[in-house]
Length: 117
Image 1: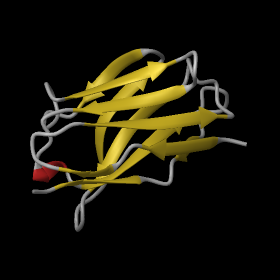
Image 2 (image 1 turned 60 degrees about the horizontal axis):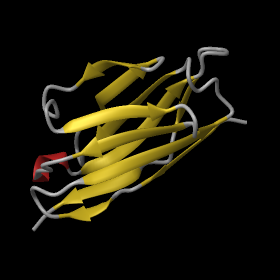
Image 3 (image 1 turned 90 degrees about the vertical axis):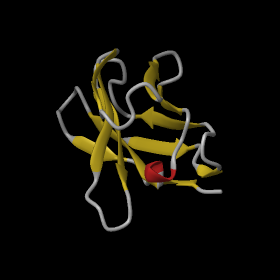
Image 4 (image 1 turned 120 degrees about the horizontal axis):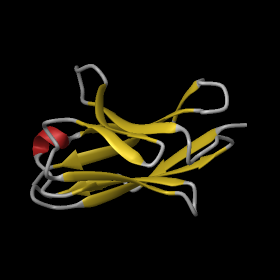
């Protein structure tokens, strides 16, 4: 059974930082494509960052230089370090995985990030 459990969201002031975590189980973690997406109210879900294997292969222009995605293969956890947050970063953030075993896509439940003073 595949599980993606996100944590780390919350309310932060503009200019602040948060680190999102996604604990994965049931997938071939190191080999699987994983990523972070976000969906703001009234907008479509968009890709924030993607990691293929252990290499970051995509990063949204809007977060470049502020966000860093990484994989901890010892703990099967995906991270998104978010710095210098702005109100435009407010959204529900979702962890995504495409299991290398069978190329099936999985999603976490989402974690709310709100940037406001």
